[in-house]
Length: 205
Image 1 (tube, rainbow, N blue to C red):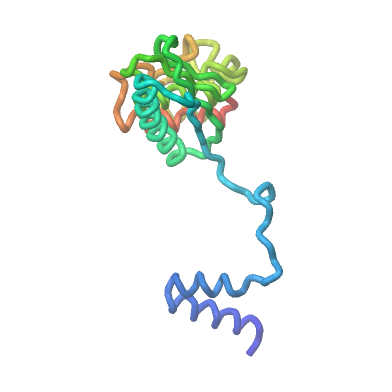
Image 2: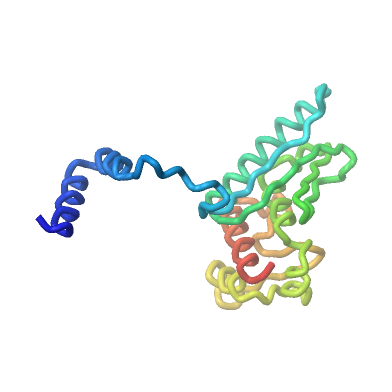
């Protein structure tokens, strides 16, 4: 049998046997001496990761804040990672003196003591700041006029809201879908927020 026919026969048998057997067959063809490529040599989708700075002996106030912040950040990071390929390493701190919450392009997010801001809406909004919304040179270049001028994010908001739609900018924020206030929240708005931030990055944020 020719090598080509042998390969076709092997593939056909693997497909007929089902995905589990096909996967095992693929594994068996790997040369035993081949070692996995080092992590730095493998292509991988970017992801957002985060960590919370915790006191070694937290007070009750700190413990309840940590719990609320963790729920908010886990939900927001999961949404970003499910809907985009953006990457960022974020450090989160609980600092009671912060009036609401804030995010910095250096990857830091701070939550103040007001529990009403310890929610997914706020976490998504602050993650956007760490990625460059209101904090990067690209933001100044593409959003400094009061209207976002990047083509991809602009096309996306027109897809959502019609041909006359635009993304307005000001004070380091954008709207619609900037999730600047709790009354802007919905799951649809949250998904669109992530898609628009990702499109802004492709525009040069």
